[in-house]
Image 1: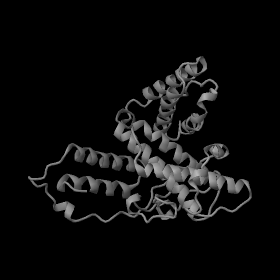
Image 2 (image 1 turned 135 degrees about the horizontal axis):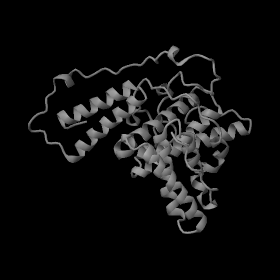
Image 3 (image 1 turned 120 degrees about the horizontal axis):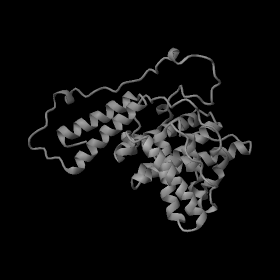
Image 4 (image 1 turned 90 degrees about the horizontal axis):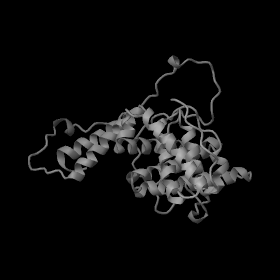
Length: 307
């Protein structure tokens, strides 16, 4: 991807979007779609904060140039041209980052990469708002991820051992600015590997964090590196694919034929389309399990009118 024009210094008024812009820079090569939407979020938020003072207008104008350049480079990418695909892509990416951090946390492996993953997941959930209001689950996950990043960061900074999992949370003590050091650390350079099962917040047991259902760490990949690995000189063609557990397919779906008296609403079609888009996005990460389960949900909805 071609290099983007450099932004001018960040005006003090835009301090609240500095980490979103940093996340965009970190993903320019790793995932340009994520980088694009991080900048779009920063642009929209900046316009609401201050679009009149000269320094802010100059910054936003240069940021707009970056967005236009990115959109031109990614013009044939469905995640850019179709909002529902872009939303699914971003949500899946944020979820995988959350699950990686949650797995490390529950295993008692506390390190900067895990802190950064929690915090970045919360930033990416902010970015999802470019597509509309967040779901209740995403709001809760953002709050939990941001609290966890702050809590573990402060514990390590003070030489204390954090408690693993969702324990001892105090919602009112979440201070985003405490994560500035965490936001400067490096994420694992390898892409997150597919999880072994589908993350469904509605099926998870409630944790001690009141009102929030946190997924168990088993959903995160066991082979995701805890730290940035040193180069071993091994060529890419020697890397073996990660074994995956494929969910059982409901045999009834093979013989199901839509009944004539089933009337699907526009909302049903929209949900079915969203499941299909989620499946397509999951396949970008070679997450077969998530893709299969979402396709089954879409098929069941279209043939029975029920989820």
